[in-house]
Image (cartoon, rainbow, N blue to C red):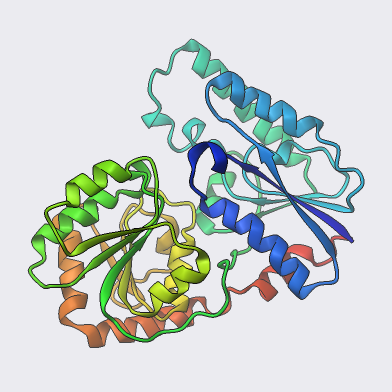
Length: 337
């Protein structure tokens, strides 16, 4: 079977690679590794602003001809606009500014409201025409249910497979440095309430990198190490005390799964959504209020109780050990001929 994986990519424009890009690449990689199917990952050009560019992106995906493939797998918006007789959607997310992030959207004039109505209409119509929809987290599944779309839950596995656990030395935060969504500033401010000589390693690049470095410049314990490949990130997990994911309304959070597969506990927040599907308070990690003082208390607990961090890390591994590419592909490709 010839399979096309279609993923809209704004990596070149933004200069950073996000989770959905890794998922598309990994999906292609592991289909080649574990099946006899032929597969091509098609990264389509994509701009979501200004609004005219967003509408053009929807039109572009509608007119793409993939009839020479036996199966098309679409991911995030607007790739599910593709018309194909055997089209399944491994759904990542909508244009969230028109959905769960709408209350935060600035300048909601009549033009924006009309475009929002039209895009939401196209989303629902296109998804209902796909053969099958899978959601790779319960959070995403619930967002689809809110607009009357049913989807089967199928957790996606991390890009790498060989995780291991060694030391418990430092706090780790792997993320795109977009403080509006990822709230890295909360971690930096939390370090002000920590007296121990424990390092915070911040992995990634992004639009707020300069501002975050300025916020952290007086604390030599905070290290920005830039972009790391999935292979390099595996090595950083090995020696982490814990991983922090303090995002607001995270879709899923591959970092959660990667950390837990490395037998590391996770600190997340009560409004982080996706990670809360796996982080059980005081069992597989710790759940904090989204403020620096509360996060600092959780960090101090692990710093002062490494034995408990190790126990929770082992529990975390048990929670996610069945999330792997063999299981994901079995669910995604079973009976799709």
